[in-house]
Picture 1: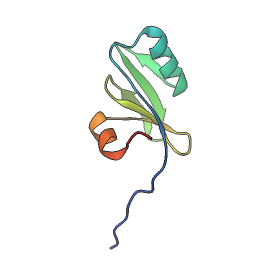
Picture 2: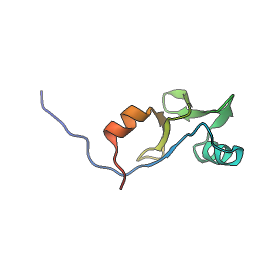
Picture 3: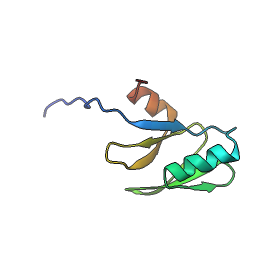
Picture 4: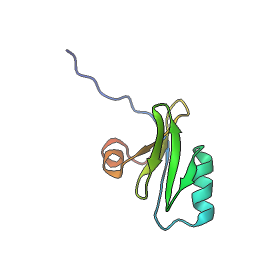
Length: 82
């Protein structure tokens, strides 16, 4: 069994904030092809089915244009700002 390291890739991500205005929330949902859920979440169609991004989560656009939510602790352990 070998050891592997994740290749460095650049992604685009936005954080869903609980105090986002309606316009910003709508724009973020539109960007990722999602729908706003009550009270402040975004339902995102992913390759594994619909997932919900909640306040504090990041929404990532992957290297092949796919979107998915990511919890902040995983995001911060995996990515750094460029």
